[in-house]
Amino acid sequence: MTKVLSAVAWPYANGPRHIGHVAGFGVPSDVYSRYMRMAGHDVLMVSGTDEHGTPIVIMAEKAGKTPQEFADENASIIVDDLVGLGLSYDLFTRTTTANHYEVVQKLFLALHENGYMVEQTTSGAISPSTGRTLPDRYIEGTCPICKYAEARGDQCDNCGNQLDPTDLIDPRSKINGETPEFIETQHFFLDLPALADALSSWLDGREATGTWRPNVIKFSQNILEEIRPRAMTRDIDWGIPVPLDGWREQPTKRLYVWFDAVVGYLSASIEWARRLGEPDKWREWWNAPASTGGDAELARAERATSDEGSVGAQKASEVLGNSDGVAVSKYFMGKDNIVFHSQIWPAELLAANGEGAKGGVESPFGHLNLPSEVVSSEFMTMEGKQFSTSRGHVIYVKDVLERYGPDPLRYFIVAAGPESQDADFTWAEFLQRNNSELVAGWGNLVNRAASMIHKNFGEIPAPSELADVDREVLDAVRGGFATVGALIERNRLKAALTETMRLVGEVNRYVAVTEPFKLKGEDERERLATVLHTLAQCVVDLNTMMAPFVPFSANLVHEVMGGEGEFMPMPVAKEVTDLDDGRPYRIITGEYSATPRWQPSDVAPGTPIAKPKPAFKKFDPAVVEEELERMNISA
Picture 1 (spheres, rainbow, N blue to C red):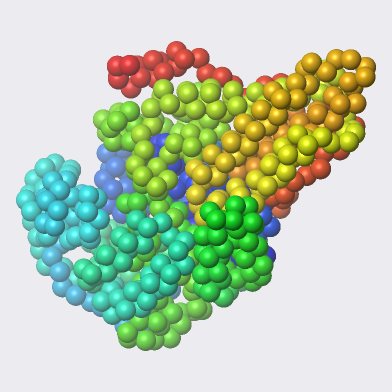
Picture 2 (tube, rainbow, N blue to C red):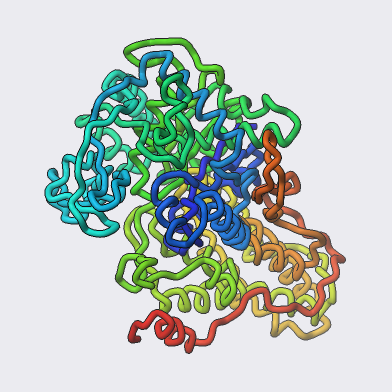
């Protein structure tokens, strides 16, 4: 059993999630995590709401709330969004817990003691009209590198390079448009140049595995060329105090929100273990031997898939499946967060391990594993335009869930989302994918199978001797477990779903060839029983394959095919109290030990099959115009 850490990007607690957010971090991480549990691995899926930083302060002020009140309100909304989408977190927490504060401060001190946090004088931006510090992200201007006109003060989203506000050409405040003033201020900087060689060696090792998406590994290696110290503190009064004498007493000096957010993967793992009553259990994912050579062998097996079909795919699965005790960590996010996960966070982990040019000792957390892979999705647009909450050009997750349910959205994100290139969400394609593929393809097959079995036998019939056509379709579906599974392991989710739906098409063709609806004679009843048994077997196995993608529907299909109980376990929202200071807050958690195995499951003759209820809903074409009208867009 492999220990698999699914480290999912932390949504910022500034409002409800829109579908572009969950297309990047949410659905891809859940499909992977659900599959890995089904494949028999020990998965720890963690995340939470990111709640510090000046944007929260500014938005809270506008809402007439304190930053904590504003974060509390939005954290609860986000919990509802993600539970409604079925994201199976072991723990979804928040960055305002006492546990998180303690872990962040301990890690900062470890980096400081090893010499990787250095104090420097730098320029800080303030608003001339208010005297308030302006955060980097609230300053924009022209990028000095690519000349993009809307670069931010911390990063250019066009070329991906890290920036400082003073680098920008014609900087301006995003709050009121005024030109900021720059003053001298003291901050702690992460000494990235002292960690550059260690980072480069790590990235070269990741590239050698062949498992990273080419755009992510190349971007990560390229930004090393311009590496420089990065400020890890800010002039702000909302955040985690700097845990050093002379600094903790300063009410306007706090740790950088991005420093504390990435540490959340570690602090959430620790909180999960503490809530479990086994406070050191998190170490099985963070201190266990990390996947290194095993990844290279896995990559070779994966590459064999294209040449050897399911044999190569099965080999890939076996390599990972036989890695008992090995820890694998996958980090899921949108491409705008790559730099923080392939450079800043790995650099912090290397520094905590004492592995940079300055050496040092291991932190109190022991030797911490670096990411096995940074799984980054591209951007999703909506009806040809960027998502913009301020302009009302947005589709919130909660609205889609209320009107259409979770699985049509999950299906669309995997089938047509931004896995490896930018993608556009349109209501017309959303409707077409649901009606023509999910409903007419998979849903129709389920309904036909259950209806014919119910009408003719009332239960799954026992088969007689199989014909070649029966064996062929059974072999095709069973072979899908290896092929589809290997694709999900490599986070090629679109290809995995495409292959699953291809098999759905094969079974639909089996129905067309065998024509069980024409087998009405008494002398044909034995053959009818064999065909319908074969069909039931295919539907049950395909439901297992579809389950990571559309888990809610999988539970319904399980019931239609005579199954009892919940097939795919679901997450729950739960109110808890802080482990250290007793404050109440909501988390997402779940009990996933009953997750079904990723393997064929022999159907039992005699299983009662009732008249089926539709597991899928066809949408009226009128919803396209209705939704466009809601968005003030002409059809």
